[in-house]
Length: 401
Image 1 (cartoon, rainbow, N blue to C red):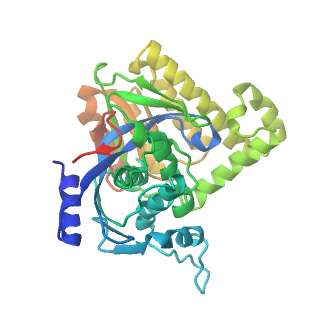
Image 2: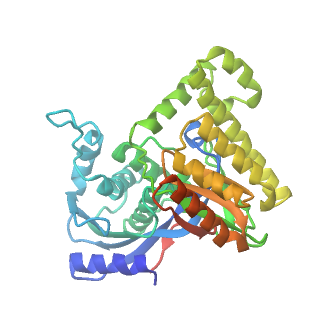
């Protein structure tokens, strides 16, 4: 039993004086390539990681939902019938001086938002009250989708206990609705799909328009390689301005091109786009359009040549996010540059940006020297020491016990 499983069980027992009805978990994810393409109905290539969020859950005899987490000493309890009124106003509530005053703490909005969205997706479910205790070893704020892991663990648990019988894609939609409408983060569906659909040694090639998903073997270990995550410890938050501004620019660019989304704009269209748009909007559009093509190219190269051949695509992706989408930060650039200088085959920031983590594709026997090089580069720059660890493509959400 993992530490997170132990912690979730112990928290549940301390909260309720009984054992949970079950324990469910869902993973974080690393996006191999395809950043900010998901909400533009494009292509992404994430994989689930071994780090997981665990939800110990038990049914109650009333219609209350109580959530607790090892992240905080707070416990939040609401009635199931209160959820409809809670979330439509969550992001709009304003205090006397104009500051946001959410009805529940943000951490609790994730599991409660899932409960709310699940009821809307499956109105015939048996919606009894539940106690939910959450623990996690997914790094928070690192761009590894700790939020989707909470959503996936909660949705999988409630889907079983409430007998809503939704499939994994439908549960991913539930998680996205919770994040978009309950939490207020304008994310796409990539994170939730990766957390729900992950499989060992495979990335998920996802068409974010149709939600068609294909498993693509990556063969990292077989090729003698490793994926090093370089968590900069610079925290980011999708519900704050930078992410929303980038999404608005993408929508503006699509409208200028007469397209429903940037999915319908090709690399060949970029010359015309540059003539029609201001410089910032054009560069936002260019990133998404070229990133979509890089995802397609990465899938092809993985299938035809294997993981050793994708390094240049990762490097090009990072340059595009740094220069065109402008979502990198000095710590991310330092991590990527130090890893490449130490011999990485490829490296890029991963996740929504404005902080978080980068990844490097490296030789298995180079984990220590590349890690040392990145740590030394951070020290030389006066940055907080990064958190470095390797990941492998892993299983998606499931019941543990």
